[in-house]
Length: 80
Image 1 (tube, rainbow, N blue to C red):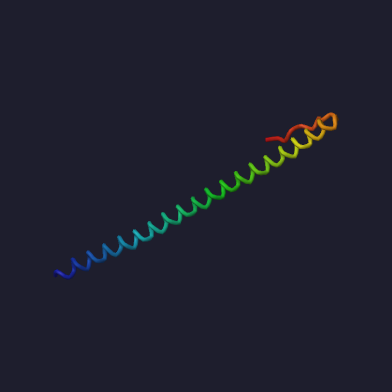
Image 2 (image 1 turned 45 degrees about the vertical axis):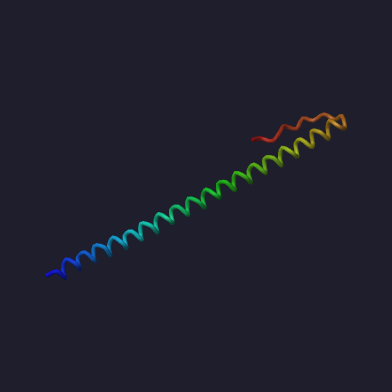
């Protein structure tokens, strides 16, 4: 008679452990996915900022070159 409660208790513990592992796996997977997405967004922002700086630098250099030559410069600045 004492064996049945022990078996039931072990079964309950087993289910809790297996469920806990699944929950942990889902939580870790979600966390890793969020970190990868966060890193990708940061990289995209950095690349966008670099492209913007490059466009402004090209425009600025054209402006300075035109001023140096005394030529009119009517090219609009890059759009943000």
